[in-house]
Amino acid sequence: SRADDSELTDDDVIVRYESGEVVGLTVLHASKRRTPQSSSK
Image (cartoon, rainbow, N blue to C red; front, side, top):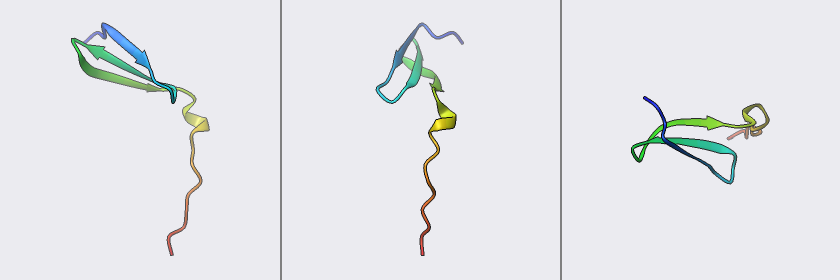
């Protein structure tokens, strides 16, 4: 499949579309997105 449209969201995710349907996601700066793990006790 080939994307015919894409959009960049405010949180740096590229959403790719083909015929109006989502066919792919690209998360930019993924290595910097790690969230601290919270302990649940």
